[in-house]
Image (cartoon, rainbow, N blue to C red):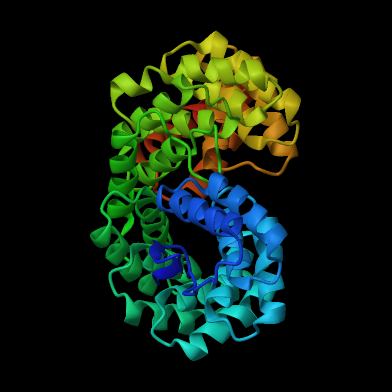
Length: 446
């Protein structure tokens, strides 16, 4: 709304929430000069100078509520909001029906956290000026802040009927809807971005909403990732979200989206960039390690070095020890693998997995006694299976303990049920040979 004020025949306009039209009868040259100084300063947007002139004028004319209104306006634009609120309240104490004062006061109260008080002033304006977009918009903001969400939703809808292309209104409405109605929120965010394509806040919220929709089954995850990537490409020096300043959380999150889609190379690129920028969380390192292991051969080659770094930070992590052992096994580094598995079993003595892996490494080192001892721990934990029975059988066989080897081969066959035909063939052959050998030994003893 434009405001006009005539002072000694001179008109000026102010564009905040409202300004007042009034004529001042000049009672003293000094007052007239002060008003003209205020007018000139406001036209130049020199609000501090305008405030000084109006303060001087009001010291001589304290009854002039119009000047007090405009001083409140000047205060609001010089970061003196508390003073502006006090003056608007003074004006309304004398002029209870003054709509511009209700509007400006309501807006200020929303901005300083006084939403509950703002509601009554903004409702007052909306009832008398139903086509005032700002009244409806800030009323919606105040209702949202006071968690009166159904009323806020109605106010946003009225505001957008008055101004369908307002990006700020679409964005604010989308924030209200994001958790409860992500599909509707998406529509408002797309409208906000169409109205103002450069709005990064709308882009980031849209990416978040598309993530939420994807968790509900919508095919929107790829677009969410593309939006995050678009933002990071445009702002490589700002990888943080508004909620997490000085963090690389957007890169980390984008990496997670890529990993969910099995786009491991892209996930790795984002996570490596986050680490290069200083992100050191264990969660990120574990995600990156998993991506390396799922990625190309070149990526897999990076896993051991990263795992070593993780173990330096968390050497008592049995899961990491197991993983380190498996990676050493893949490289046929059996002594190192056995040491990692041994450390894992020390950290977690009830881990049948740890003892089984240790037994495998020791067998490949031809430490058959150690293999049998490790498998005894598995048996004590009640976690024997076809594989452990077979490994025990061939180890006992190597040690020439024929009867326990024969028993283990038989237990393997009873449990395997055709899953490992090559090992079953070997077991049957050894059972036949061992049985014959035991018979011969028995015959010689007789």
